Amino acid sequence: MQRFFFAGNIKFLRDRKKLSQETLAASLGLTRAKLAAIETGNTKSPQPEDYLKFSEFFKISIDSLLKIDLSKLGELKMRELEAGNDVYIRGGNLRVLAISVDRSNNENVEYVPVKAKAGYMAGYNDPEFIASLPKYSLPNLPADGTFRIFPSTGDSMLPVPEDSDIIAQYVPDWTDIKADTPCIVILKGQQDFVFKMVTMNQDSTILLKSLNPEYKPYSVEASDVMEIWRFYAYTSREFPETRTEMATVLMAIRKMEEKIGQIPK
Image (cartoon, rainbow, N blue to C red; front, side, top):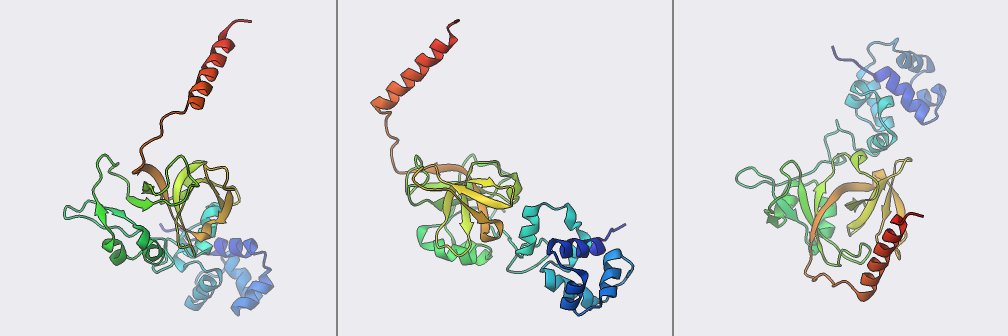
């Protein structure tokens, strides 16, 4: 039997916004008595327009208000819902991944060239745009993942060379990201991607950190992130540098220190 959470969700959302019953009722054009009855579940069949009013006010779909116990969701997911990323909404605000497949119905690995970066921001969930991108078939990729190739620019992630092509795997659930995971992050309102070490903060913001210490880390709101792709591999036209004499000396010193530390006192 389907369980519904509408009554508890309305009280939870009202408390979350720190609204009194009088204030919320006035905003929705309801009486305080009717709102109190809805929150306690004493009104078994609210009118359809009531559902619409609550959905529009809290910016959460009616399906989610009815079917999901919002109090059990984490802060990050709640912020996603309030930003319009509702699993029950069907429209442009839903973070949906568009993919393309080959004749055997296998997913392609699309390449996002530099000239298509700006277009990707607008067309990342448009199947026609994704289908227009160059496609590749790469060996040895896990069969259960979705992969895409992004060109990197800048030196914020050295020693990964500038102008490398980053092969990355789509991350559908950001809460699975471990601290300091290298990722391609697609941010709203930017014409470029960022390639950073990603950490999910406790306050539901996302910390972006460069490997290059000259670049300071910064945090962004989860609602400002469109997509996250976990680093898998990269290709580069630069030949790896040989180990410098200083690096060789430092390694020899470390090995000597380890041996000295093993000598009984």
